[in-house]
Length: 417
Image (cartoon, rainbow, N blue to C red):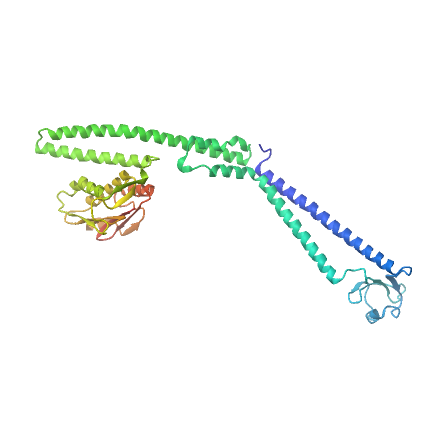
């Protein structure tokens, strides 16, 4: 349980990090200043000890230019302004002091020979300081990561829990993984509770969907089965030619209704009992679709040509597709029915090309169809036949590919697996 919100924790973590680094840098600068002072005093005292009992005078005053050290006389004759000057080559520091009563300036000379560090020693000190600065920077970076990680730990914990949930196999147990009560009342807690409620709604929806599809599968198929049984009994009785045609129309309408119910139930199911890995032969399903919808060509004088292209496709047992056989049958039925319905009299033939992994259904179109359909090619067609969007969804769920191409002369549907 966290007492503060995520925003306050981040602000507090940043303040703590800055405060700690400021204190560390303050101690580092203070130590450097004290070290420099001690070093100057030690060097000066060591130089005095070396000249004992005659103590060297490092600091001297001069009233006249002529009394200055020879290396400074030429410079002093230029009457320099008041201030401090440094001469590296001579290792001298000079202070120009204004004299009273309009006299010439006086000079205070500080001989730093033996007190200041040599150039080589300065480089070593530079390396040491660089190392210290780098170490402090690394310390600050590590401290910042540690503090910020602790500040955003609830977010990382929630993200890890959400990542473990599989949206494709959502169950009631996945909701228990969130446990929003662990995240308090801050922003992360609000997000956790929202995700938990969303998962509960999705889980309830999936459960209702499973119950509906299970019930609908029985309730919708039962009357269809009863109707088909009654039609079989009627077909066995003595019927007039007119009555036989009516019964045949009812039988076809019932069959189409059954196919439609199976199609929508197949799309509505969240899972298909592991049938997505089923292997089945394509040719029998294509022949069945042609036979079931051949009545749509009555009176049109249109031929149906089946072309087995590849050498590997030489018998009815090939080609072999992998997926849900019922979904494949529904897709093929939609393509064949669309081709039969949209082919007008004398606009044949309808060709069905079957390769090892591809099925083409091609039909000719009339001028009226050309006016309704412009040339198009898309992976998700929706304009040519009501069932094509359903075919696209079935293909997506089974890992197949579907496309449609329509031009002025023909319409070609392509289904690959």
